[in-house]
Length: 245
Image 1 (tube, one colour):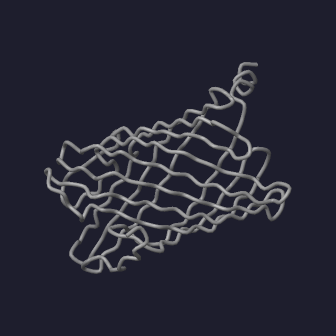
Image 2 (cartoon, helix red, strand yellow):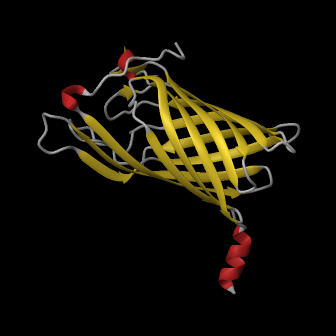
Image 3 (cartoon, helix red, strand yellow):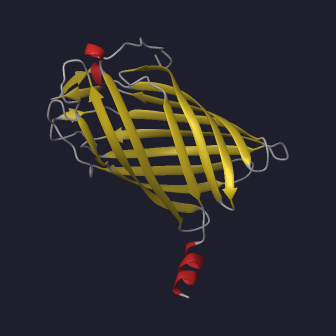
């Protein structure tokens, strides 16, 4: 079921998992309608339980993802098509007790985004749908199964510089397989609700703070997440011209 709440359980042997991640992402406007970009995450991970004297840790850059967004229409709503490909560039380690920073397989994303502003009311709504085609990890003969991602949000400008938003984020994975045998233990599901504050710091630079709460899921860590983001927009041609002069 898409909204099955699942059963929250502690990790075996009083276990714990801690992950910190930095996502570096940039987009370039090829035209007024087409943007292309790239994203690469950096992970710092640790797991521990009562059976270990040394908790397994790993850190490093994960898999590179190239993205594209094409805006189809902008009135009465903004509608865009999106796509992405994830390359298995991160360090994938297939050893018991070690945490890989890469997943070891290719992913292909196909999606759409739609949003609308209700100006002069300081309110907007937006939603995004992505179907993720995930290929087999040939090193361990594991197919992680396809995924569907749905994000929806509503935002309200409390002041010209301060935005309050609530986001709903869903990930629903299909059954995967190990060595060609279907495994329901690979089915991953998670739903987050994320109250978010965004503040326009200066010009086209904004800072965003959010707390993500998991409200249902399966085979997925259920802990809270704190996210902090910084984004900025600038004219690359002007920036290069100033640098040269």
